[in-house]
Length: 78
Image (cartoon, rainbow, N blue to C red):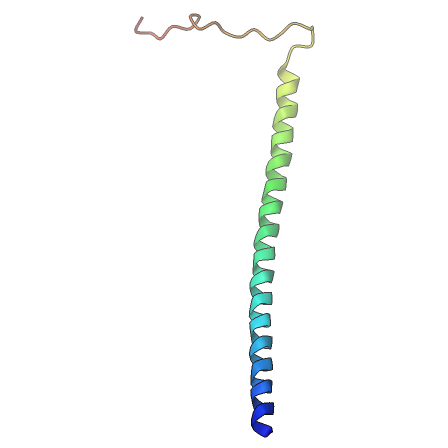
């Protein structure tokens, strides 16, 4: 009976060790994902500022911005 109890304890110890390892990897993965989310939030905030700046450059007189025609700026070798 003692042998069976020892095996049961060893099995429980191994399962506990496995769970602790999985928990550690899960915590590490969560931290990495958190850093990705933080970086993406900073990028989104930067992009929103850029869009705001671009909107300020659009004429407010109702006219569409003039786009250069393909032939307006010929390279110097022509």
